[in-house]
Image (cartoon, rainbow, N blue to C red; front, side, top):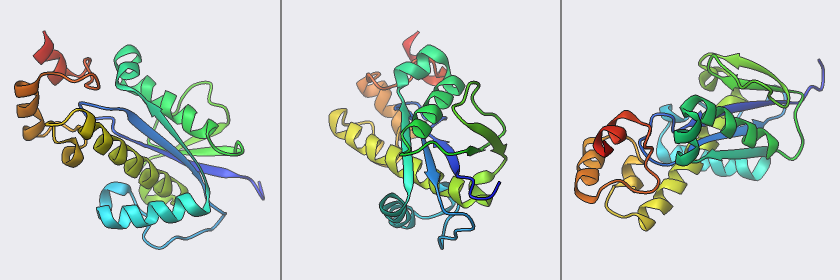
Length: 189
């Protein structure tokens, strides 16, 4: 459909031991090219931050968080879908369609949705969403590292690296750790 408004959606943080899963939705003009757009994991931190500022200052975007408590309550997939719903509802205007990175999308989504495997490498609006979600989550985890110091979240962003594991053994479980994730669950029980 001509003049159809399409947003790209991607998430980050599914495998982390602590903190939220974060989704972003971004609407870019049709056939728009922004130099350097790619999967957020495939570009440098500095380039991600530059692209993130350009996207946030120029285009309609929405960000959705799903907390570690929601992840524990619903499971990581359902919490991811909740973050996606929140992201699309945080856009200024609902698009006609959403292109979602991956192979699954939420039931009862507010707009027509289509999945694109490796969409963050193929579709500019999904790449943009990947970048916004990653930068937003990283900034959140840096703030949490000030509230709960010692876990190294300003560098590991809550992922299960050795330093994080050793910090948990020393400091215990924080309020934003995901109790349902096996490594954390095993330490608790």
